[in-house]
Length: 192
Image 1 (cartoon, rainbow, N blue to C red):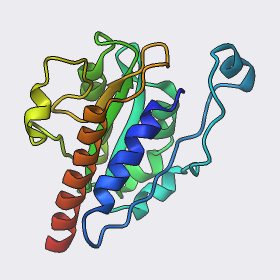
Image 2 (tube, rainbow, N blue to C red; image 1 turned 60 degrees about the vertical axis):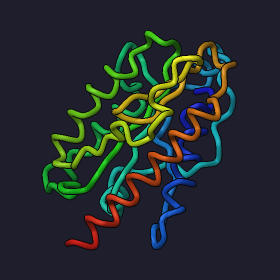
Image 3 (cartoon, one colour; image 1 turned 30 degrees about the horizontal axis):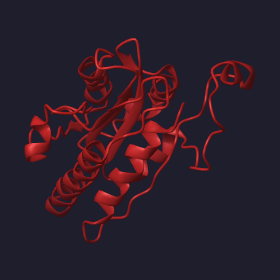
Image 4 (cartoon, one colour; image 1 turned 90 degrees about the horizontal axis):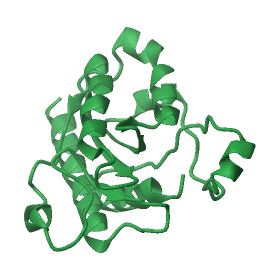
């Protein structure tokens, strides 16, 4: 809503693009809230990132899905998009493809890890291979002096009331996640 997921997505794209031979596309899912509701929430206008359709997922070799958190799980907009992937599920067109996740929450207790855990079920039903970042980000995973989003499940940030922006450390973790999953996706595709 406030651009936090998009900021992380842009860094993930940069990280993935740094892997030779990898082509990266950035998409957004359709908005489900009407303009009146968005206005009451003081949501800024949506970016010009293209809107994806479910069938376009089949074209990709791998994914990094990002979403804001609502009550400890992915926002309804993203869930509605995944609910529309029944045809892909029925034919298992996404099976065997690596997928990572990242997220933004309103607060430290906003459900970053529960969002990840509940999102994994979507990947499992499609037969995707969940690729967490684990502790591969190194020392940045152990930062205790500053507020930092993210976890071994994936990159993350805290949006607060929308005014807090992702920190350099959070953006660095997002870049790392993009590079990490692109490397794994490239290896898996090359082994096929």
